[in-house]
Amino acid sequence: MLVKPIPDNLSQIVADGRLTNYSTVVSITLLAFDHILTLGEEVELIWKSRWSLFKAVYLWVRNSSYGRVSYLPVDSNDILH
Image 1 (cartoon, rainbow, N blue to C red):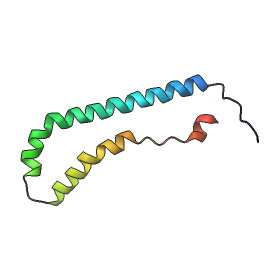
Image 2 (image 1 turned 135 degrees about the vertical axis):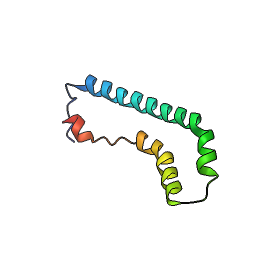
Image 3 (image 1 turned 60 degrees about the vertical axis):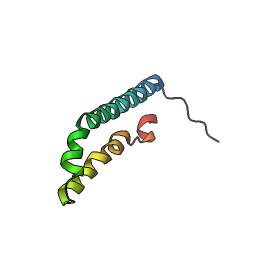
Image 4 (image 1 turned 120 degrees about the vertical axis):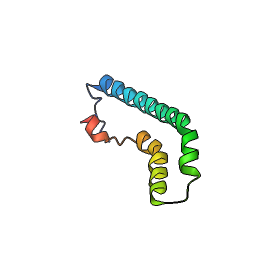
């Protein structure tokens, strides 16, 4: 079994990973804060309205934003080589 050497820039890789994690947490927190601030208007204008294409798209974009923010694809080959 061939053991790969530890990359010279390991400390930079760890720092970048932490920065990415912190940025993700901040983004999700701001999204949640925005949802809380605008929930009353959303209930009145969107939830109580009849179903339409606009309503479906709005709800999809609004509620799928957490998944889009929290998913950051990372290719380990880019980091280690």
